[in-house]
Length: 157
Ligand SMILES: Cc1cc2nc3c(=O)[nH]c(=O)nc-3n(C[C@H](O)[C@H](O)[C@H](O)COP(=O)(O)O)c2cc1C
Image (tube, rainbow, N blue to C red; front, side, top):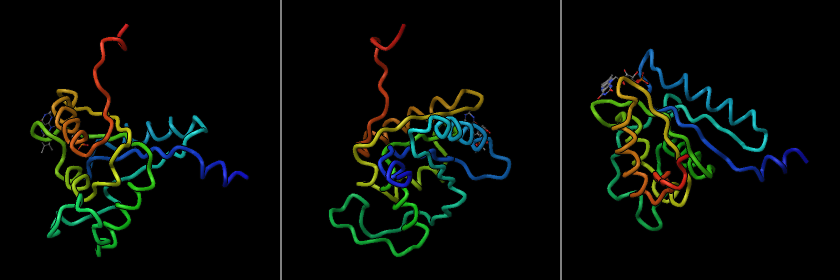
């Protein structure tokens, strides 16, 4: 019964977008993950890129290729499956030189259809609040046919 309930829940994955020693990203990511879990109606997952040490993208074809053969790398297989199993995402991202971290961009680039038509939100931080990183990630998300938030004056008070 409980297993059936969990199976039908929306899966929201919080992605920890940096891996360096002493990183800040895990603090907001763990907090957001806990808030999602507290709701009780969401299957919240924490996807820490430290647990997915993928090589730099090195495939002959693009991940968007129809009928793309399964990846041989076990870590990439796990990552691709984790994205496929998720219905939506919270990217917790640093700003490195006006953009997202390389490790996050690489993780994004390995996958394509598994991102399509899924909701995405961004949480950033840093001396300029990570705004430029989110700006770039929004454009990337559109290219991935995801559904990033739009600024809509009707939503403002
Ligand atoms: C390689 C590098 C580049 C950075 N570039 C920027 C930047 O362009 N703008 C900014 O506001 N902060 C920048 N910072 C500061 C980061 O926002 C800050 O160190 C943040 O904590 C990094 O996230 P992390 O701790 O999760 O790795 C940079 C930090 C690093 C390590």
